[in-house]
Amino acid sequence: MERLVFWLWARVVSRSVYELSGRLARRLQTVVTRGDRIGRVRGLFAAIAPPLGSWTAARDARPIAPQSFREQWRDDLGRRAENRRP
Image 1 (cartoon, rainbow, N blue to C red):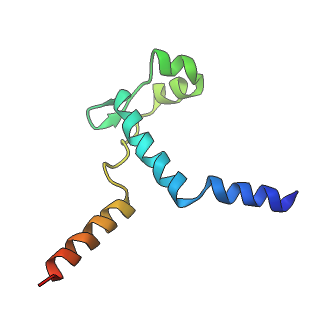
Image 2: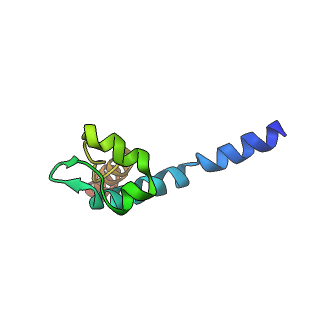
């Protein structure tokens, strides 16, 4: 049983799922971002996830960066490789 649980956990936290969840979060945050902050969540999101509405009523957070560190790293490596070609 333990082996199965760890196997499932490894699949859930795999790089592809992690990167996909980051891209999805960046797209979804546009609904709750105001200016350069994630402010109070109201309406549908607050109804679906009541703790989210309560949490954001007293706090604000910075939005997720437009590119993850890995994406920035990949882009930078790609540019370096293009500059080295004769």
